[in-house]
Length: 356
Image (cartoon, rainbow, N blue to C red):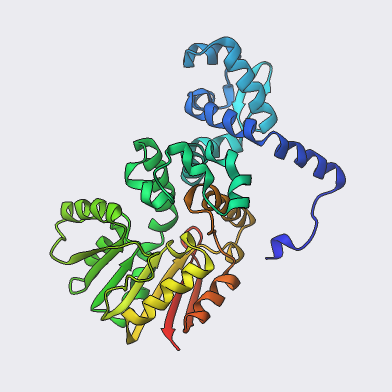
C-alpha cells in the first residue's frame, strides 16, 4: 500500500505521464506490432551496430512507410533509440521482446481484452461483462465461453492464467501436504494442472476436480493423457448455483486463482459450501495474487489493471482483490486464517483456513 499513499511526480512529470495515458491504445498496439512483425527482433539481432530504416524494411518485408512510423513511435515509447540513422534496442525493448511475463500480459491484453475493453463504461454501469459480446452473445461469463473461444484467445487466456500460478505450484505443494491430506477437492480445477501436480507429488492422495462441465471435459482429456484417471475424479457443476452442494468428506480443499473470479457475496457463498464439505480438522488452501501484498509497484499495477478484465470480459463483478476485503469474506463464512504466506512465485499469497 505504500506505493499509493503519496504524490510522486512533479507537475511537469505529471502532464508528461498524462500524455502517455491519452495515447495508451497507440502505444500498446505499436509496441505489439514492433514485437510481432519482427522489427524489434531484427534490431536486437544487430546488437550495438544497429540497423538503418532501409535495412530493417528489407529484413521484415514490410512497406517502408509502415516500418518508419512504427520505429518513430518506438522512439517515443522508448523501445528503440537512433544514432547516425541506425536503430538499436533499449532495455525496455529487450523486455517487450524477451520477458515471459511481459509477453503473457501483452498477449492476454490484446487477444482477450482489447476489443472488449471499449465496453468498460457499460460494464461498470450495468455490473455485467459487456465486452464479452465481442466473442459472441451466448454466454453470461467468460468461464462458460472458455472451451468455445477461438484457439488464439484460449491460448492467451491459459498462457496468462498459468504463468501466474505454475511457478508457485512447486513452492506450495510441501505446504499443502504438510498435514498429509488423503482426499483433496480441487475447486476450479481448470485443465487439471494442480491436480496432476498433487498426484505426482503424493502417490496416496485422491483428488476430485470441481468445475463447469466444459472445463471438466478439458481436464478429463488432460488427466487421461497423464495416466491419472484412476486417482482423479470429476464433479461438474456451476459453482454459482447455491443449491448445488460440494461433495463432502474432504480433509483439504484447494482453490488457485479461483475466488478472484467472483463477487464478495459469491465468495462468501462458495466458502460457506466449503465449510460444509471440509472435515472438522481439515484445511482450506487459497492461492491468490492480492494487489496490496506485492513487493514491487509494477506487480500491484498489473493486478489493479487486470481487475478491469474481470469487469469487462469475465463476469462484471469480481477483481484482483485487496487482501483486507478478501479476509472479511473469509471471516463472514466462519473461517479463520491460520497462516498467510506472501510473495510466493511471481505474485501469489497462500492462505490456510480452518473452521472457527
